[in-house]
Each structure stands twice: as C-alpha cells, then as structure tokens.
Amino acid sequence: MSSTFDITKNIDTTNKKLIYDYYPIILNTDDYTYYTNEPKYLKINSVFKPNAPNLLYPDTMNSYNGSKIYITDLIHDNIAQIQSQNVIGELIIEHAPITGSGKYYTCFLLESNPNIKFTDSNSVDELINKISKKENNISFALNTSIPSQNNCIVYDINTSDKVFVFTNMIYVNNASYKYITEKITGTPASWFSKFPTNQKYIVLPKNNITQQGEDEIYIDCTPTGESAETIATYNVPIQSEYTRDASKLDFMKTLINVMMFFIFILLTYFTVPFFYKTVVVDNIYKLISGDFHVLNRRNVAVDVFISIVAVVLFFTMLGYGMNKNFEFVMYAVYFFVFFGLSASVVGYNREIGFFKDKYRDEYKKFAEDPANKDKPEILKFIDILKELGQYIIEVVQFDVFGKGETKPIIAMFATFILFLIIILPIWLTKKISKTVFIFLMWFIPVFIILPGVSIISITMIPNSDKPKS
Image (cartoon, rainbow, N blue to C red; front, side, top):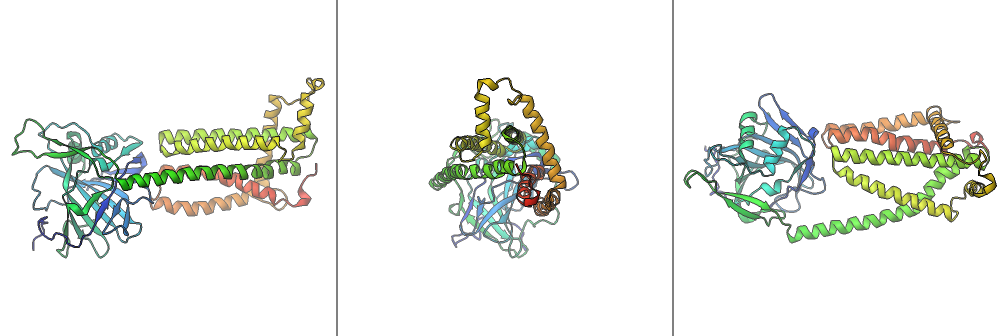
C-alpha cells in the first residue's frame, strides 16, 4: 500500500477546527539541548504559559500546551504535492493536554535554497542563530514566521496521540540552511512514524485552520537571479495584528491585573501593620529587657535589618531578571512597590499610635531635648551597627538552639525537606527550568522558610521562658 500523503484526497468534511497560537516566549541556555550523538537534533523545553493554550483541536473544548520544541531532520518527505529538494528539516512542537487527552505534535517543514542568497531573518532563523552561539534570553515568536496555511495533514500515532503536518513551509535563510544540513541528522529515537500504520489520515482545508491573531501582512518575496521555473514565491509575514477576540482577551487580562493591583494595595494596608506589630513591636516587648533606650535601639536595628534584606532581595531579582529570566524584573518592580507601600503604611500607623510602641515616643522626646544632645544614650550610627550585629547573633542562636521547647533548626530542616520533595519532581519532569529550580532552592529557604519558621517559633515560646521587661 502507498505510504504517501495526497492533500487532494481525504478532505475533512466534519468541520473540525484547528486553532494554534505560538505567542512570544523567552528561552534561556538551560532550556535547550543540542544532542551531539547520532541522531543529532535540537530539543527545547518550551516555556509557554500553562494557562494559555497553544493548540485547540478538534474544537475549543480540547486544548493543548506546547511543552517541547524540536528541530529535526526531514521526516515527512512523503507528501505527493511537495517534491522540492530544498525541504531540509522540520520544526516540531510537542503538546501536552490541558483539557484534552494524549500528545499532539505539530510539524512545520523548513525550506531553504543554498543557491539563492537569502540573509533576511525570521524568528526561526534568529532562534537557530542564537542557540548556535549559546546565547541567553532568546526571544522566540513563532507566530510571525508561520505563513498562512492552505492544508494540514492529520493522522493518529495511536489511540490518543496525533500528528499535524502543515504543508505551507517556513523559509529559512542561508545560515540556518548551513546549521540544519551540517548539525541536524535525525530525530529522537522511538518517535512517531512518518505515515500512519493504519493508512488513515485526513486533510484539513484552509478554512478550518486558524492562527490566533492571524491578520498578518504578507510580502511575496521572489529572490532575484533565478527563473520562475526554478524558484517558488514565498509568503513572508512581516507584521501580526491581534483579532477582535485577542484584543478582548488582552483587555480582560489588563482589567484583572488592575483589580489585582488594588486588592494588593488593600491587603498591604490592612495586613502589614498587624504583621509588623505582632512580629516586631510585640516581640520586642516580650523578649527584650531594659529601658526605652534599649527597646528603641533594638527596634531601629530590626528596621535596618528588614531594609537590608529587602534591598538584597530587590537587586537579586533584578539581576536575575536581566541575566536569566526577564519576568523577574517585573517581580522586582512589584516588590519595590510593595516595600515602599509597606514602609509608608508602617510610618503612618506609627504616627497614629497603632503599634503602642511607647519606647519610641519616649526616645523621641529624649532626643529632641537640647539638654540631652551630647549624652551617650543618643543613638549613633555605630550604635545601630553594634545592635544590628547583636540582633543577628541572637537570631542565629535562637534558630540553632531554640528557646524552651521550640527547636527552629529542626522545624526549618523538616520544612526544607518537604519543600525539596515537592519541587524536585517538578524539576525532574522539566516543568520548570534549571535556573528557576536553582533560584527557588535558595530563595525559598532564605526568604520564606528561615524567617517564617523563626517567627512561628517565637510565638510558641512558653511564657516561663519569656524575659520580662
């Protein structure tokens, strides 16, 4: 029996709809791997948003998310209407189900002619070029490189997995031709076959294939120096506009973000003062003995410590975002806004007396009295540094040795092990990248587990162990 696809036959008449959307993503060095052993191919662990599907088929109730991208040797060399010797490989996207079942593979044929000088770059060319240079922070917007599709061949791998082969090819430049023909020699082992074992397939017509936001402007590019008999005319998308549905979706996302921002402000206004009073002011009264000078000095040291941690966290996220994942720049900005709002709210509540930190008021009166300006009790920068050092020592001692029945170090170790048990399988299944895994492995323990367990442990100190002021 024939193992060749004929796109003039088996035209689907059941009105199945195929909608795809490969919106822009950012790739880092640990997201892609070039397999140097035969067969050689390129694999990318994609970072498409899990709640934003890339593929809908056969209707909008069955959605799929791109999980891996491959650049491989040519698989589908068996399409009757495509006999060009210039088809050199395929870009294949593996999809995992969101609301559907099984795995779906979309295959885009890559074409290039070495006899024609073509140096313009599309997103696929940029991807290949930057991966070959092992660059980081690679922006990849596949939608802009996919021409309008006239047909799509659909066939089953098994009872749940499917392959979609688009027949309008993506044209790549000479540099990509060199990379693919020299470095790409095969496909992953034990992959799908190039023709269904049951000999059954369907062909979706143009009207049944939609690219989300597809309203591109195309230019017909005909390379010079060749006759019409030797070259084809290629549709090169140069601009992409959102459709009305996409615009509505963007509006809804913006509206939700604005609502979340206002909710965030309200939560900050009502929760930060209570948290600061409970964790800082109340515990200073509980755990520190001495007059108002001692209590105020410790409060200032704690404020300085919190500010230092916030500054370190801000620049860490900012630096990580600039070098690894740009989304963390946004997180850094959010954190900066949150910390600024929190500081303002704390200052306001201190002025209206919410914290009931009388030692601050007493010290303020003492410091404002001209008769006391030369007294040693006036807080100096060196005094703050000494108190900050003493505070850090006491925190470490408490975390390691505990107080009374509390054993923070044991609780922190147990919490970290639990966190590791949760996050390690997620990383091993490639749901998150290596850089995100490493970031979480120090960020969570340092900024969440350590302070969180310490705060909880302080509240559990028996009354008999709490020093009296």
